[in-house]
Amino acid sequence: MKKKILLLTLALVIGSTGLTGCTEEKKAGKSTTEKVDSYTDEMKDTLGGQISAPSEAVTKAVSNTWTVQGEDDIYELKSDGTGKKNEEDLTFECGFDDEKNITLQMKIGDAEMLYAISTDETGYGIRLTSLDGGEDLYFLPADLEFLDMTDERAGGILGEWSDESGNTYKFDEDKNMEITGESGTTEGTYSVVENAEGTLLLRIVVSGGSLEYEYTLNEDDTQMDLVSPGTDTVHRWTKIK
Image 1 (tube, rainbow, N blue to C red):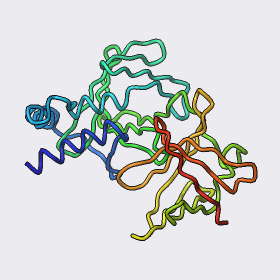
Image 2: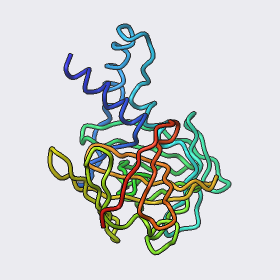
Image 3: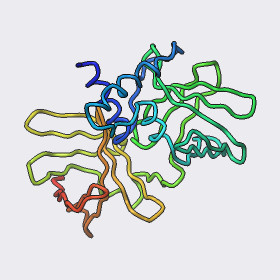
């Protein structure tokens, strides 16, 4: 039962907060996708059939329009497993293998490529590490502008902040950050972006997941209001230094 719960948790985390992946050197393994998905099928009887199979959850998580860092290519991946590389049609499948990789197998024309998927330090991009001797790819969402901390839209975040519960948040110029509370200090990274609607977003990435906020700074950058997308709750932080 414990194994089933862990797999269910994996599916929910992948579907709602992004992907996870090991940072060590990757190698191809034997597919375990059917086995992993079968545990979810068994759980549907208990939980009313509202659970997506883990491979389906990964497919939904990578469904987006992506730019490739350092290249001019645009990849469009759809939740039905189809898509395009520039104007060329492609198909893809997501799954798992016994080397603990989350995998993406892509077919473009007669060419097939196999990758291991992992998230990046921004919380928005995905790294595709080739498992068949091809080139690695680094995908970033096409609808986001990543802001440098010298940009006036983002620079006010730098420094140390305190929330209403007394937790502190320290943001460095190199995109590293620390959260300090009663339980100790947690290190992580962060990114600042503007989406296609002109909304400014702050994403904090720590071990095990990430948090995203819409943020607004006051005129002298001493107060920051943060709202999780899709909610109305405002978290107010005050700059310490």
